[in-house]
Amino acid sequence: MRRLLFVAGAALIAMAAFWPWLRQLPFGRLPGDVVIDRPGLKVYFPWVTMLFVSVVGSLLLKLLRR
Image 1 (cartoon, rainbow, N blue to C red):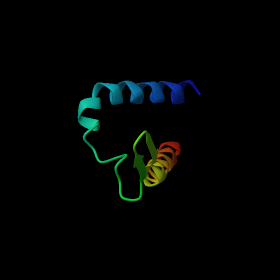
Image 2 (spheres, helix red, strand yellow):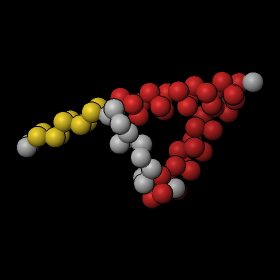
Image 3 (tube, rainbow, N blue to C red):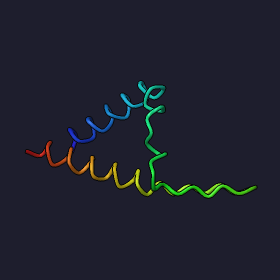
């Protein structure tokens, strides 16, 4: 458990350090993400982004457990 928390913390620190470059990636604006933009209301549903992050995370965890 300590190792998992250490790796998660290190990943968050790395993402914070590289945020100016990571922000330019198309994640969060993938085709299939729903944006409702009306005057006074903006609703965002990142369906495809969540699916992509879930698949990549599952694959990484599967590889790390071996």
